[in-house]
Image (tube, rainbow, N blue to C red; front, side, top):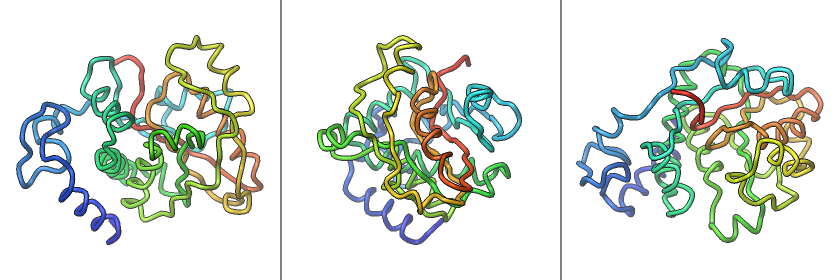
Length: 234
């Protein structure tokens, strides 16, 4: 783990509230951003990146990926839903960075992700990012990059269309909504790279597919995918 990543997390621990976002209990000094009890309840998937896991199967026949995984399961009203909601809508940048670090530790133990050379988050549209003040996927990517000691590039991919939320759209509508939604800002930065594309929750894969198509068009680029959570069957 890089020195800058450790310093950043130490600063966050000084300034953010000391209650667990999972259960509301007061955090103890040795706790990270969630309490030990909630940490033990985190629903890890146990997927491996290159073994035909459910996340990899989402992209079969559609997007050529070297490896794909999700670190946690996502369920409505579950612990992960609450943590993701806090990351996206309650300004918990510290929590997003912490969860990115958790992702990084899992990926670090999976040899399928060893060849990764560059970490790239799914971007928000500039209007949405101005409203929210940050991109939670970029913070997850920073957390991963800090553990893997890889560069994180949040400026190589941009969202050209304000697609709005995908939550209430049908599967077909999601795919149609994401058409031509992304473009490369710095093609030279991803040429020849093994890119780890990062997002928060995987549902249909429409957003990740749209990003992957753009990134894969760069000369010599290879692609792997990691999401915080997978909204599939437990």
